[in-house]
Image (cartoon, rainbow, N blue to C red; front, side, top):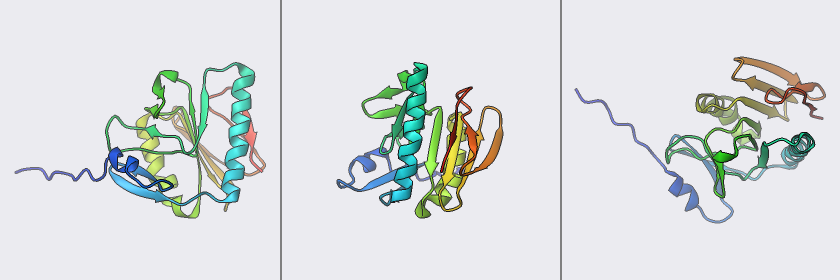
Length: 177
C-alpha cells in the first residue's frame, strides 16, 4: 500500500514573484496574504522595537532586533517564509542580507483581525517546533499579551500596563500601554 503524497503547495519563489506592495507569508506551503497594519499595530510595534533596541544597545548585547517586513526562513525548506512583527536574533550567523535563516530567539506578533488564527495557533506551534525560545502574542483589541517561554515550557498572560519580563534577558521587562 502506497502512502499518500502530501502536496507541497507554494514555495518561497512564489513570495518573491508577488507584485510590489503585496505582502504574504508562507507556512508549510500555504500562502497567507497580509493587509497593511493599522495605526495601533504600528504604534505598539514601534514602541516595543524602541524599548528592546535600547535595552540591547545599553547592555552592549550581541542580539539584533528587526521589524516587519523582515524575512524569517524558519524551516530548512522552500515552503515556509514568515515576517514576524518583531524578531530578536542573538546568533548573528543566522543573518544575511535576505533575512534570518532559522529560528529567532524571540518573536513578537501583534494581532490584527485577519491574523488571529495564525498568530494564536498556526504560528504558536510552528515557532515552538522550530526552536524559537520566546513568543509573545500582543492582542490590542483585548489589551492582553500571551508570553510563551518555550525553554521553560511556561506561559503567562498579562494585561496592558503590567510589567512583562523578557525571558531571553534576565533583567528586562516592558509595559505596553
